[in-house]
Image (tube, rainbow, N blue to C red; front, side, top):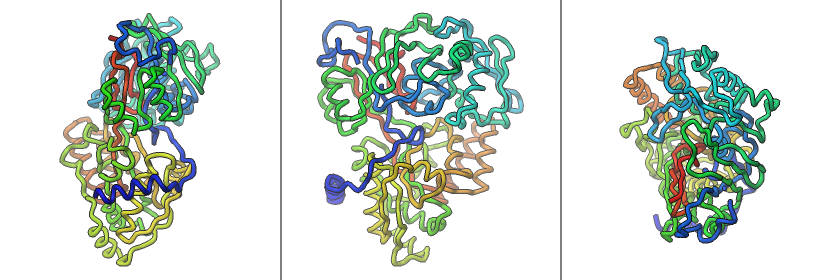
Length: 521
């Protein structure tokens, strides 16, 4: 293994076979971040004895909108800002529980289709207006015009404010995970939207703990504390989010004190920063799976034996070391065990790395002399190209030839099923119901199993948690036997921040941190 690892490392240093790569939004994004204040620069203000009232947060990419319902609203870098400005009816905890936020509680009709949400009273928008049920109705109808949020509003048939503080949401069908989906639809002020021509691209009016001061999409965003915040004013008054698109430059800025809180976009920078002992550091698991898509209807990958053979060529240990500096955990599903429906018993590696087994399966499938699979589409300029190179070498050991081709349109190609093999990154949620998008018709893997589709529908409608677990266990066994795709690893996000700053990174890629939870010693 060490000899192989050294060879691959040398190969990655010497060889660059890719054009500039692509990034996507919730399907795959480097991670999480946002922030600047030059007056506070210098050794990150360690040990100065002065308690600050501002914080500087790094962001790894430029923003495209502040609109929580608009195009790009599900892109992580945009969400980092929206999370401080807006709130939703609920919030999903790192443990997968659903907590009330703007909704103080809710009830469900006997048939599981009508959810009645009772709202907290006295919650103010940043324009001073009180939030009412009419704002919630307006926000949902506005969000339901956004393709970016379709996953979350797809089950909704209608929404109606039935009082000043009561909202009924009627679903098209019973859908047990629905309360967790409401965490993804922020509430905006109807009056502000109407007064502002429904334009929230560079303006905002939410109920969150911070309000906008100024915004430059390419450089920085400044916010200040909203003192009338319904849960009490934040500890830190002013927040600056600072864009630095190059990872090494961001690390230098952090070490010089220009940044207080940072996601290590350049993951190789994490270990030295951690070893220095100068900073708070933490690696958090996140709801994201790096995986290899196999087009299940493209010969010879329409043969399950071939798909299983390729799965046995997957050396996750080396891939994690090469592609992500060891800061990831191997996965065998598009989820992890924090996801409702996934248990330790069904989270198993049915296809351990075994080149000889791969050769046996290929021979059984009718390819005793190996085969040429043509081109593998690769998201270039990222860790995807690194684990693709590991995969390419192991396929070669099993007699399978593949050419790697960097692509700027990998997500679109996969959605259109215009590929044979393709690297991909996909987010997941706290409930395995979300994985229906990976295993029911029109998924990226081009997989279609009517039994699996029916089981997903049954599980989503079932209100009994134990019965739902049984149904998801059946689904997991089938999709693993069918070897739909090859999950590789779930990233961990490496965070570093000022030694005097209290912060709490979270698991959800798009909701990775809240400045409201931060404070200075």
